Image (cartoon, rainbow, N blue to C red; front, side):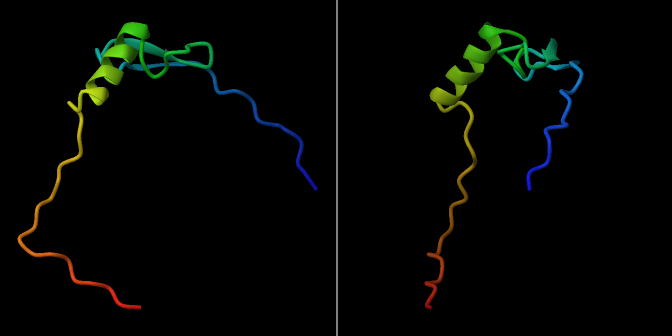
Amino acid sequence: MTLPNTTTPLPPRTVRCPACGGPSLYAQDNVHRPFCGQRCKSMDFGAWASEQFALPEILSDQDPPLERS
């Protein structure tokens, strides 16, 4: 048995653009969401591609113990 599709789209809201901090419309008709425009979206993608955003690597002096099954 499947339920009928009763979900209604969320109303558009304004959020902060993660790149520039300006207002950004968070709605289905904003193809750049959560960014305010193509420029901010491209700048963010470029930062990831050039590894400006990275997770920190935790270095250890010892190797982790081997797991035996």
